[in-house]
Image 1 (cartoon, rainbow, N blue to C red):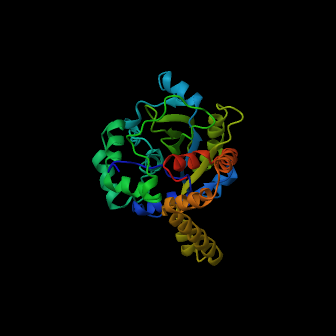
Image 2: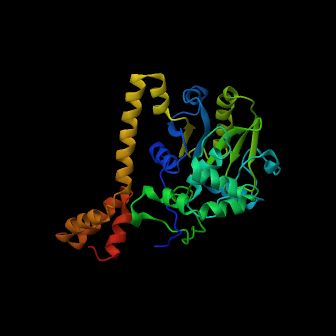
Image 3: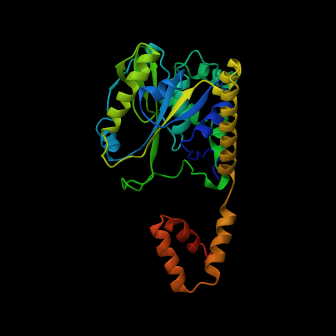
Length: 317
């Protein structure tokens, strides 16, 4: 296993919250957003930014090949003069953590903790590609990012993406960040050349009102059948806020939520390979070739064919 490998991580509030806590960022939490509307955004106030996950498909590749221009909004090449932090994604599978850092490093009111504060100071003045390289080579950031999957499920950065993609089945997803800074809504996409400036936005209230329109405009660029989007809100620590207010009901809600996150993250780290192998051995041991083929056909219908064929080729049958 390569020391420099980065694995994919889930678009999950519990994963991202534990990630920022392990990076020692203070009083920050990530929450699921189930609707892209003003009331949903305002309910998480203060909202420092959002992480948008989408299926990277044909429309994205077409724009990338056409001067890498953004789908919506306009590039801001002078972003460094405005003090905007922006890192390019220079290694595969790092986009989730980089999207979070791109947002949080632009929020001066936040306490990034000693490690990331020193990191930000070190890379200040670097160009976006060099910052991306520095993030990719950070042992702290990489190890925290990689801590949410079982060891054997790592996908190495040396593995190449397929050149030809089936828009429905290639499974390539991408994270970008949106935030309010310098009087506008900005989109920070590590695969783009510069930060992308959207509509003018002077306050948090305007951010909650205008961001849904910005994201909906982005979604409208995709095929009407494409529904694979998710949104996470970067907020203050709601458990800490409830404790400061003495809100007993809120404290209980937050404690239950965090207990659920803890259990789910523990499951993510568990290696089920041995269990899967033994189950396949058990299922196939007393099966004829015809019965085994029938199982494969049934698995194809359930979207599990790749898993079964992989182990069949390894002699598990």
